[in-house]
Amino acid sequence: MPTKKDDYLLTSLLNGDEKGIAEIYTQVFPKVASFVTKNKGQYADAEDIFHKVLIQLATRIKIQEFNLTTSFDGYVFTACKNLWRRELNKTKMWVTKDQIVEPIDNEKDMAIAILDQERWELYKEAFEKLSGNCKEILGYFFDKLSYKEIVDKTSYLSETVVRQRVFKCKAKLSEYIQSDVRFKELKEL
Image (tube, rainbow, N blue to C red):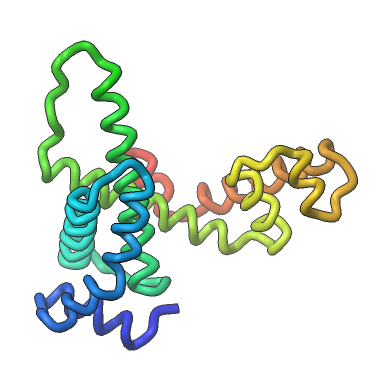
């Protein structure tokens, strides 16, 4: 849950308060820089990603109602991770094509980043509605553990049982996502 400090940082970003923005950099940027540099990036890439996310967040707050449902630094860090992964995937596509690729303009890129973040938030909210058991099983599954490894980490007796449980939990997660009023809008964009 967001704290008063989280509200302060969000308000500082929105109002351009230098002291609050400096605190955002001190508190969150080192984590982002560490993540980016450990994942095929440079310090300058981390700065670019961090700035884009802060601009994206400020823009989003100005154009629509926004409620922070997690800590400010957790939200910004997750948005930076998602954006950096998208950048890596985009770079990978550029390398493999033999033709000239038109760069995406910044406004379109920011709109896509905001949309990705909204989809991620919808997923996280739906995931939090799952039972503790489903969260655990899907966590292992999404971390790409084999069914055998999941059996070893849990009390399930066989890979077949784990496979069935993963299927049921994924179906429940999908049901929660699709029953949310935002799903249709985010799906069509």
